[in-house]
Image 1 (spheres, one colour):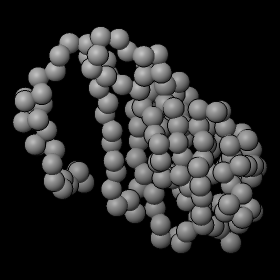
Image 2: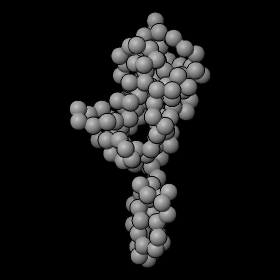
Image 3: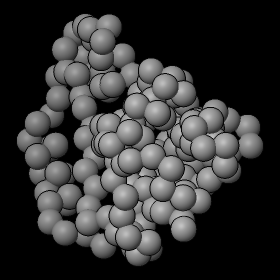
Length: 157
C-alpha cells in the first residue's frame, strides 16, 4: 500500500541550479530523488512546498514523496537519505502523512528572509548568504517602502 512521506529539508543552494529538476542543471529535487532511489530502488517524484532559484538556500522547506510501501519507520528516513546526500543538503525530520497532504497545496505560509550586510567589509562566511552594501542605507525610504509588504497577500496567481 502506498505511503506518503512528508519531510523537512535544509540546503545551501550555492552549488545548485535551484529546487526544480531541469535537463541542464544539478538541482535539489534531483539530488533528493537520487537519494530515495538509492534507499528504495524505486523511482519516486519529490514534491516541494515551493521552488527556489539557483543559489538560494532553505532552512526548512517541506516536501513529500509517495512511496510504494512503508519500507522504513518515519524516524529512520533522515539518516537513510542523508547518507546519500551531499553535506550541503540535509533532511531534518520526516513523518508519514495522509494521502490528502500535499507539500505545496497544504502549506499555511512561507517565510522568506533577505539579508543585507551593511558594512565596509563582508565577512567570508556571509558570501552567498547576504547582499553586501558597503554604502550607507537610506533607512527612512526603506521603512516607507517596506509598508507595502505588511499584511496578508494573495499570491495564488
